[in-house]
Length: 422
Image (cartoon, rainbow, N blue to C red; front, side):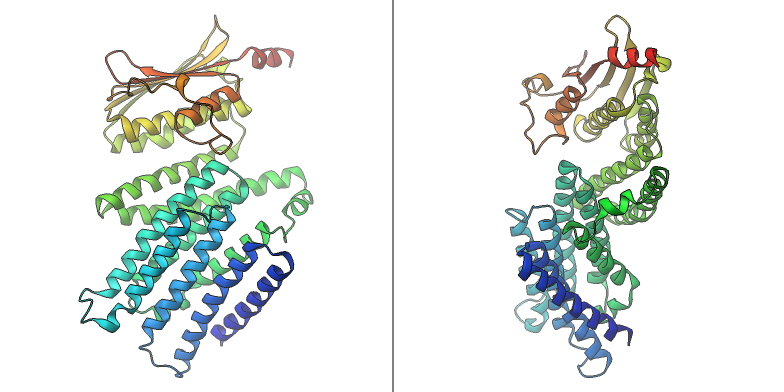
């Protein structure tokens, strides 16, 4: 009975979404409606099997319908980021075609002798990881609340899909409460993205203190829920192929971003507090990669006055510099130094490693100004833009004896004057 109720509710939601598309011609409405339609047909199939109207060997049809659900959900999430174009569209279509092929392969075993169940699950997992990484990249580039919500729903969907495609019997997968939770998350995301839920009005109906407490609570729940899902996926991929281990490393960085986001919601801390949090979060990753980190923080009494946007940009630049050491440098030691240069009345941050160094023509002062799509992104152009955003200057060059030196200088004259007036 519960399954029938879910099917009827899903059908009603399909009708509402398609009606909204007819009125507004918003592609998000159409894609959401089609994704829910394929999901409701899949649930209807399960209900028919449960009632004995169809034989339980309808697994091929169940996989095809589930593949259509994956296709619709992926297309909806990409369109939510305005990223439903080449090459993402090609990936979604390729996943659908390959998935349907493997879903039906066992019907012609004399042509395809391999185990189609293994092929179907592996194809979907590989394509899902590629799409998730692309969604994470776009979300990071946009850095908006909507983009982060899309990323979180995508991570949740991938973890559920991974369990489903590996299940021996897809016809009982609906019994997991995770499916209903994911459907609710997709519905809420759709309502927010299409502005049918006025989040601004809801937010301003609460006092500022309540908003701050709610923001911290949501950040912590995000860390506990999505963070635990990421840890599980990383643990699974770490024992796999080199490509899967590379994917695990990328997800490890996503997890680091999530932890730093939670840390930053605790308070509008100083640059000293932000860098201390970064050190705490990155130390285990560097140690596991065989990189020894030496940390030297000086003039903390002065640097405590560096707060707000200045502190956040210093954190992001330091984080990117250390991520480059971890991924690209092949170093076994990195030294992080931050101090106040009294003669220049400026904050100085240096990250120096003993790795292979940069190519001769690759320096931050030679990088082009990031485009509107790259601003706030990663890489040397993004780091240089972050420095300029707070009136600073970034230089990346070769360290004495080899390796790479990243030097950030940000004037603190106005910051200190404002503190003296206060």
